[in-house]
Length: 126
Image (cartoon, rainbow, N blue to C red):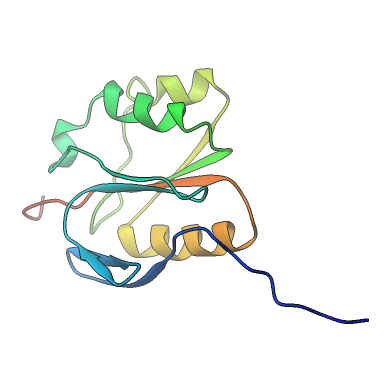
């Protein structure tokens, strides 16, 4: 049996640190959404307290099987009212700190799963 390595075309997080992540050799310091299908866009929110239902509606439009929400440097859960669009579309959401979210996204995207990663990169620690 001949074994070939899987070729993964999903964007992946190559490294991360306090207040930044690196995607495709680009260091990002702003909130961002990555989808394992290759889509990437800025997520216009700089503080956890400023999250709205609209932020999560954007994620539902990607139609992933799972959203991984990186809530910042510490674990914080969004109110159920904010994530209603995901629930209504039967899309799972897992909340983690940014570092755990990056690792989990890389693993699931590497397995070929259709996942979205939403990273809240706060401009100042909250």
